[in-house]
Length: 540
Ligand code: SF4
Image (tube, rainbow, N blue to C red; front, side, top):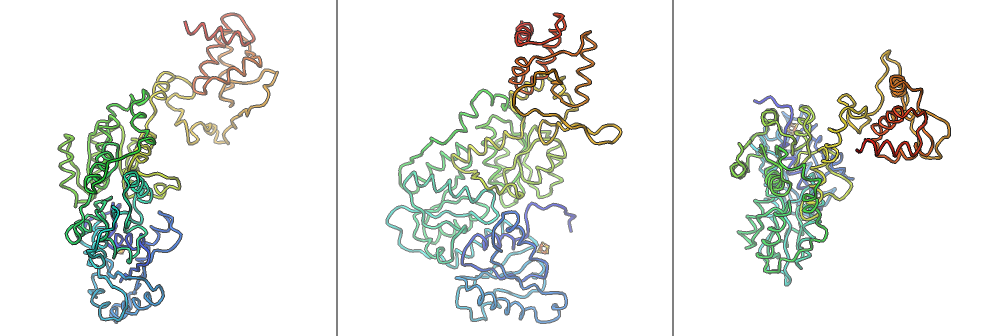
């Protein structure tokens, strides 16, 4: 027994659901109690699929337990076939159904279903979601794929993209693009959008592209054994890895390693001077092993970060993560307990976390910026826009995503320089998400409204241009004017217009300096000339 609040992976039958939902023409009959249908929501809400997963549950209840649950399973299986007429069916049990020891595979075999029925043995109490997807895809491939003649032109299968996969949808497009540039055709992409009939012709490809080892390595190995198809070992996440991937594909397919780098912006972005501030940023990485391995390389070799800790939650890949940690001179963290991850992050006190949705929460709690690199992820990481992780565009996306939570170099410099400014002092709050909303007044009344001028001709009469626009700001300007011995300073229209051209983050400072200068000069009005003279004065 283990007290658990958050889990990185679901039970293995969720992995099987991810394969079934990714495919077309396949149906999953799941022996499961009422209530286990909750997993549908992962697909319809997080991935925002517009239809229910192709899963039929037996939904037995407590009162069924003493009766014929095996009969319920058989009836459900028949009904599902009659209703959906799939090309193939997979059958299995959820955690609870595993305990009642009906045998879905054996039961289905006794029936007269005229399409392949593939039984799944998913040990729910020892294994998890990624095992479930890998095993399910393997069983489907094993049941349906056969050796056959190769296609006349060079083609490959793309293995591993699933439903509910972190950026799988767009990674497929990137991989297709890389292959297209080398003149390699696609035989089958699976499980994503493949039908059982597609699986039967996988043997015609010359090689396999293994996109995600977590989900398809066992199937890739099986196809290598039975169909003689080599498969790629490099996952093209990051610029260097993508170059290596192209070289590897070219070599196993016997083609030229052609690549079109015209869209690749990441290397120059990383080299450009504003990225200097990234150098040596201390990062902690956690997620599934494949994404962590890729991210560690990118972080160190392509972004100039210092990796201060790394780990994964999927134990199947523990060895490779240990090797990676050795290479980076850090202690590997192999755990599915987020509290251990939180502790390791606290101990390493990084400046940034690259992790999953869990690490995003940990980052929030500890006040450390975080970018997401791996499942499990929330709905915002199934974006409407094109956002791959793989290939050249993936490298561009990764650069933008990772640096976004960090304070940019110029911004960091300016924030330090204008630390005392009313906009940037320690209590001003963040510069976005309403951070500048005025605080409620002390008597608990509503906050004063911020006056904002939206273009239009500048007024000819003097008014408050303190930059805060609120009462507190006006009072502050008044106090400043009084303390400097002048009456309220009048800004003439030209000068005011010019002031507005100054970037907002230095405008307040420019305003105060100019007023101070004008006061020293004994002026009551600020003209355009006064503004320029003040500027020249303070520039000296
Ligand atoms: S028993 Fe299994 S299927 Fe049911 S809620 Fe728990 S993990 Fe999910």
